[in-house]
Length: 349
Image (spheres, helix red, strand yellow):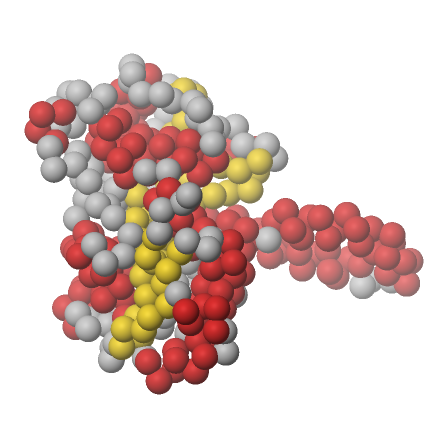
């Protein structure tokens, strides 16, 4: 029997909150009958939505929050002025033990800043990182960091590699994932000193991962490795470029099939194939970016997603808790002796 799990939801975070949060929670409830929810936000808006779904209402409660962190708020501003916001109260619930995980579709920078302040980082982890999935020719690839840390040193990159490998084993079921460092070339002399030093350390690691070496941008979509490691600046640019390219080709296809009568007939014959393509590349399938390295499970949903996408973000959170994700990170940090990372005895909680 699966152990009960309470999920704290930032009900006011996202472009279409609280509607998609409530509807997404209902989809997640059907998938995970052992889960309960605490909705943090405007009770006058959330309560009528829950009343429409009696089965969800039974396993849910509402914690009223007067404040909402806007999408335009700076992280420092949100931390100072948002102590009674729906986002902060949801994070506090995890910190106090009232909930096992927090999920929010709100402001990414504010969520990261608040979560790091309240939950703190795991022993041996200097900075948390944002990780998510990429669809590739071989299946799915984990990539981090996607925007939490603009500049990273060698220790950060090594720690990201460890966390990404644990994430891949937990979420994708890979026994020994391959890890690559994103660089401007595959040759050993390419890149700045920090990334070359990180590569040297990973080649000598005793961790249960296979270090592939350096990879380039086109290796991401090819699925050359299971885990792509980079700094937050590069990772975020790569993510947004991939999203923009996908939209570009979608528009190109739409225009091509509308260009003539014969093209329209061609689309009729190819509808089944394009339906499969749409499902395979549906961004809702990959919704749910994990804030790795915190002393609590915190998942960021895309702000513009719908109920299905939000439910998938909840699913990521449930899987990570069920598989003891943070415990695995703490265990493997003990394998990283030296290299500027604390010894096992210095990392006791």
